[in-house]
Amino acid sequence: MPEFHTPSPVDIDPAWSISSLLARRAAQDPHGTLIERSTGLGGTWTPVTAAAFAAEVTAVAKGLVARGIEVGDKVAIMSRTRYEWSLVDFAVWAAGGVVVPVYETSSAEQVGWIFSDASVRLAVVETSAHAAVAQQGVGGLDGVLVIDEGGIGALIREGADVPDEEVARRTALATGDDLATIIYTSGTTGRPKGVELTHGNFVSLVLAAIGSLGQICSVPGARTLLFMPLAHVFARFISVLCVASGAVIGHTPDTRNLIADLAAFRPSFVLAVPRVFEKVYNSAEQKAGSGARLKLFRWAAKVAITSSRAADDPAGPSVVLRAQQALAGALVHRKLRTVLGGNLQYAISGGAPLGERLGHFYRGIGVLVLEGYGLTETTAPTTVNPPELLKVGTVGPPFAGTWVRTDDDGQILVKGPHVFRGYHNNPEATAEALVDGWFRTGDIGTLDADGYLRITGRSKEIIVTAGGKNVAPAVLEDRLRGHPLVSQVVVVGDGKPFIGALVTLDADMLSGWLASHGLPAMDVAAAAAHPQVVAAINRAAERANAAVSRAESIRKVRILTLDFTEANGYLTPSLKVKRGVVLREFAADIEGLYVDDRTPAEQEGKRPLGLKPGSR
Image (tube, rainbow, N blue to C red):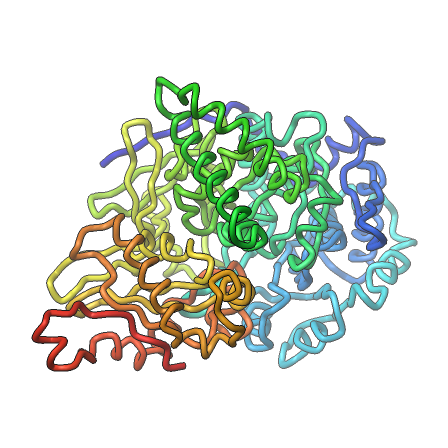
């Protein structure tokens, strides 16, 4: 079975904890800025030095001690991404506790399960509404602190009489083997499992990242704006990485203001899921309007993609293409970089396939998107594209210190110091996932001759048609989702005669698309049945089919009249479609794809099966 390994560029001290990384930053550069806090006034940001942050962490940790939190006790954080999230995170570690992050959109039932399974003692939440959710039916909880109601200040006051030495003693007790956090998987199917990550998991991964990706996170001026939920392991890893690497962190809780926040903070690198990159591209195309301006944007986008592809050719771009790239850069690309803050050089993408088109587009306009792959169980990245040898369309070679192999069925197996130690209170699931030191990811992929990984799907999501054809839905879903009208896609066809797809429309993009195509305003329900919208989705499906064989291609699409969101239960907090829920609740729509609705004359004339307008 193919196997590749990338050695770690650093030696890891097993005695180090995450708190050691903060202590080192504060000692090496006490007066340097570690975090910038948004004032909310005209896009201004207030610097917080490393020494000031470390002192505040100690003060909050003393409050936790005064509250009765002992070494090993569990403290939950339920909040949007904001300064206080990181503050409490590091304070719990300083006090010897274990952090249990909870998505701020979680239901009372989900919160109850997590609190009960993890034996949470104290919850720190953002709002009174979160407090009400946290207190529903949860036994054993000693208290709830509300950030928006002065909870952090109260905690600091409570700990005023606790000696600093007590926090220092507890901090020193933690080593790499000790539990740092229990992160509950977002649960696309079934009840979430608690992933136990140690201090050593984070420290090894962070120090390896600094050693291998220092040009991104360790250079002077490195800064990132966190807008993904800190309850997600990806954002959490970046938070700890920035503390250790010398980068400056900003937090923003509301992606609706993301463009304005990017312009004000001017990050040099960001992390995001592919949907964010799709939204930026589609919004830019929509703002171009119509006529000559739209033609200019599409020409500039094509030049960017062509130039990026040419960069992978040993001959490089032609003289003509270089001239076109310079012109497109002056007319369009520079404006797009300005929208992203004007200082952005790198972006790290994970969580779903980015797609080669977007990868080449962003590289062509001067922003290098490094696509990577990882799971909660691997403390985030386990493969990532290196800036100096990027292969667009792959998720890169094994991350520093990591082994990756694929078994005979194509399943991806991972080994390394960043791999979790097990599922909390679930030895059966642990034994199934960890075999002979290797973590069985459940994802399917291939490794090329250079050890670069391509993800083709999840083993549980592989579709087997009635004709016996195995189809990985991810490729089709990714390509079809690239259309500006499309929000979400679920490819179906297990046990069916052909492949179909459920599609939802992007309400934010709809009005602009309708106007640019000379159509009157209409809601999503009306658009789902409109002939021109149906035809546009049909063409998008045909373009997606170009990536696969005829047997794997989408033959019919049903456009739904509602979107999949976290609020209605069809997306996880990390924006992954809950495939099992969709397949169950839209079973009638799926069956409708396989009803031949052609007239006898059309059937006789061999008219191909077409799109199916929405029924919900």
